[in-house]
Image (cartoon, rainbow over all chains, first blue to last red; front, top):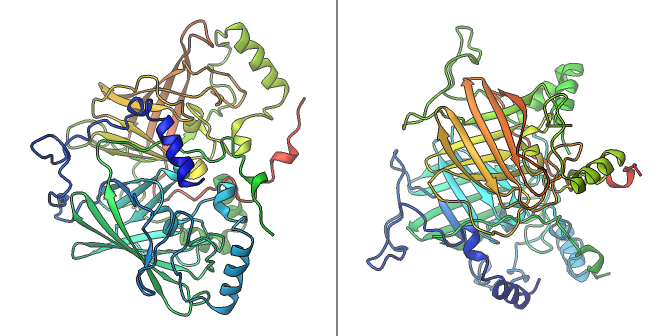
Length: 259
Length: 258
């Protein structure tokens, strides 16, 4: 869907939005004297003194997903950042996928995009609990769990779309290690990976309204060295997630073109 | 698609090789902080836990036990269907459930989502909100307990919009704003967009919870009606498994029925 179409739909749909808790005032958040959320207030803390990342977050910009290793290259709505240092087979596959106009993107068939893409797209809600963080993704209404109870990543698990995640704190930064992926997900449009993929996500809540996220992609079978994507997420206060059911009336597939 | 019962059966049949894999997916990771018997096993008949505000804490992984969700009406009771709904229900019975949304990887709706055989859910209770993580389809639902009212005329949704409150030790969840696509049960009791579902969850002790559901949809039923009572067991020392229905979906072309 192009940004123009999305914009048009949002315009047409603007009336029913209040009916869906999309502007319900978030209780207990800091506000400025005029009642608006104070997005530059300090980041909240949980009872154990760690930063509390809870909230709805959105990349909220097309200028997101910068490959910090390769320089600051814009990632357009469906464009790619400059991407990682691909091994020859992966570069060939990436090229082939782009020549086929990305028609085999699993997302077009309502399959999960995987965390590196999902973290960047529609809003998602982080729910931080003792020992566990849950991420509720608006896209495809999927969830993901990140365990902070000290367990290790599973050895040789059944490969999955969203992987298995454990987290720990390094100062004010939440570091999330994820492995156990299948080899189906596209990291960016066209960028492949193998089951050897490991990601490290670093979440740092700068202040009440801003969350920095760096994702390091480490898959020596696909990339010649690890590479890092960077996001600047913004809090979406006074709102709520929408249900998103990709399989409902998915008429995309017959219209996908490409070689 | 993955099926816990198949995993379990396979584990029994192939216990040695598969046991390694099970542990590899956190399927037998000890749940921290739960009451245990002297032999170290979870004490499922310990009292139900409470949150800091004194309410029962329903958190845990739960699986419906016993009854299946073929027909959610109590034995021998026929829900008071309106004529159009009766016709549609009979047609769904004749077509052997071929058009059930789940066969097309669409959400089951309520109350069916709670009642999937071998489909556990993790209930997470936080101040102001409960999250229910459903293993089936790796999807979730939020239940707001912060006092907000149900939305007026929302965009119709597969899983509706839910608010909860406590009535004694029972959590009452009210849900509205459904589309008219989901089936109330596997047999296909239909509903309209006017559906109002009340789920009454009560955690009887540490390892057991019960659910009774009231279906109120004046366009599809002549009066509100109450479903069977459902028992849930806590699944300790395990975790949800990823379930991506669209992956390698091969059911559709095998569907039979008139």
